[in-house]
Length: 105
Ligand code: FES
Image (cartoon, rainbow, N blue to C red; front, side):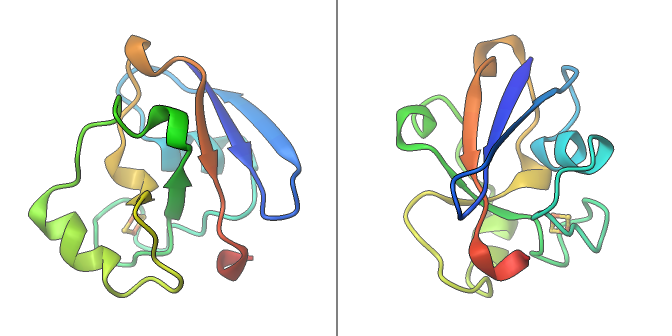
């Protein structure tokens, strides 16, 4: 399913992310900068912070308690903050738009 990654300066990258892969893996596997993912998806680094586009927040499953805890340490947290390694792709999310925070560059 397609994911669009929008950088803080407005550049837009797209990646075809297979079902079951995370939004983080989609960026890393396609060379899209802005998601560091230092822990490789183990929910311990919070360097895969993204903002889910407002149009998509209702469609993405809510964060687990552990993710919510981790989101407290990201810089510039917002309502729509998520850790991209915890968002798994599925058909319903085809066309998902996420915004990359400036601080991860
Ligand atoms: Fe480390 Fe997501 S990749 S918390």
